[in-house]
Length: 438
Image 1 (tube, rainbow, N blue to C red):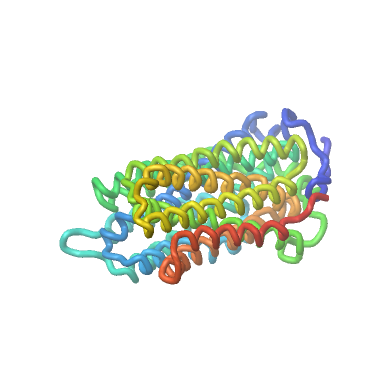
Image 2: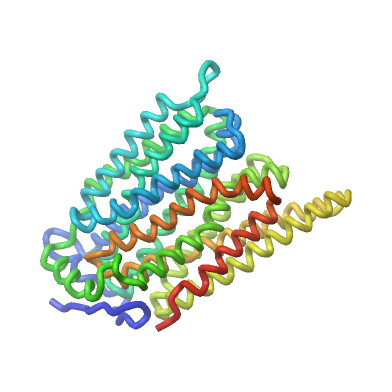
């Protein structure tokens, strides 16, 4: 049995992408079982992404259906992210202690049951509208339960795939986030408009339940001797919570998620209120962001596996995000000034430009996740991958909490241009925090 010792960051030696990992043989597992594990990771992340990205896509209908102001809307959407932020690290620590199978099954099953309960009890009707406190509370619990998905599925992939395949595999897993979010953006607003939020929550509950069944059937630990060997070769150095490089990448990931969260949570409101666009344009625009992010994530994983340039790629994505959101802020500022000057003839040209720049900026700021998580998990080691990924996702979902609450305040103080320029500033801060190439 050969052991491949994994180094740190870009100095890590590589195996050929076509080489099957040793953990895929023995104990009744066929040589391609790792792809089933990857498929489960994709399905689990997609089902929860449809929840935390799809529900904000219904923001316009949630605002009217639950009788919310912009500030209240930001609060309830932000608490969904806060729930995930609070639970990610504990779920990650439990994953490293109990294993990914038990944590993923528990999280998916509990999330499905909770969403079904929401579909029955927490939906507006002609006779009763749930209060903002109740809605915020149930979305907080949804986030607490759904935080189980990220670290557990990522640790499973680290256990089943070797270096040289991990960036590609983790990037495919991360396509689940825009895949689920894109499907949510395309389906859930129309579903909320036509059938109400009982149908929205019921569909999301069914998605989590079906994924849990697949995980129960196919998600298993690698053969014990291989798993122990992998842990021994991958966990040299300090534990994630005592590793400053792990903290740097986790913090940079959280900062670079700020502009992404701004798109996911308030782009629909921005296009409706500022752009005067309808549901079809909003859904297609957000869907285009998610599809573009999926394509770029798969490509970036394969590209960085081949050239071993993860850190350089992360810094490049930071700078491209700065440019994209700065451009969006300037286009919005120009459009607002033209409106103030009563030069409406330019508006038919600027409206498509706003959509185009928003889509491009949204794709740029969503293309790097698989690469970042692979670099982070490689630094931490397979036996501590759950903790490291949980730490990073805690920062990610702190952004999901703070951004929806902050944007209404920025709109009161300034304008949509200020929102997007602030997003560009966060991406700029993330750029030097990402580690330089080794």
